[in-house]
Image (tube, rainbow, N blue to C red; front, side, top):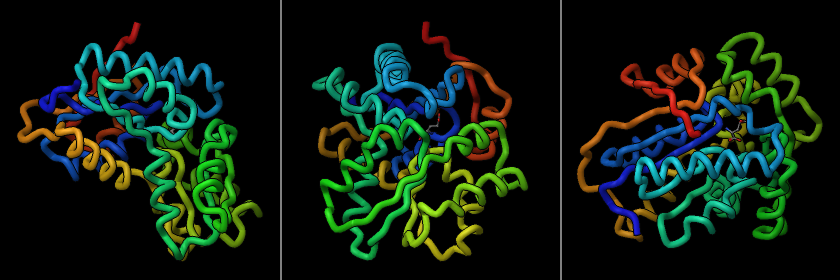
Length: 269
Ligand code: DGL
């Protein structure tokens, strides 16, 4: 079984998972994080489930075999939808695997004031039917409306946020009739919290926006505690890798994670 002194492995297709990494860092400052953004294959949202599973498996194996990670966080809804079950089964008995969808579903169903939840996500997440299936099964009376917003993650990755282009794209998506009458909105892609302020502006802050970063950090804390894997003191610095170096990733990562972030290129071959 895993070693409590090991690091937490976290991955996403790019910059989005940093929102999850940041929440974990805040809640569990003693834990070392090793982050991989798969920028060579970004966006995952328009890939087939088979290909996403392959990318997710390659990255996970690297985090576990080369970095001896003690827990794995799939900080991407698209990869969680396509690859969670495979990764959980592959690494069963070796280390816990946490996805970003289940903690969010738990949260939604626990909130009695949520009657009609809107969900925005990548095409692959919407097509997987994972949110739809889990919500319908867990809370029959809950109404949900899900919309694919495929331009958002690449737009953010390219550095378009807090500007007129991103506002226009968001306006187009959020005005869709599908999202009429929702009382809360799930940002079901880990990139979307990076444009939370703009989404809030669209709704004049009248709709609660739910993102998975904090609920996932708490879920990880719970699991590490249960498995006696919590680190008592920090010995090593966090490490951040990308599979293809991108200037936007480097800049945005610093904006969202702090100037001290040192970005390295990782080859998975
Ligand atoms: N950040 C990802 C997610 O949570 C995916 C973005 C993409 O690569 O399409 O779904």
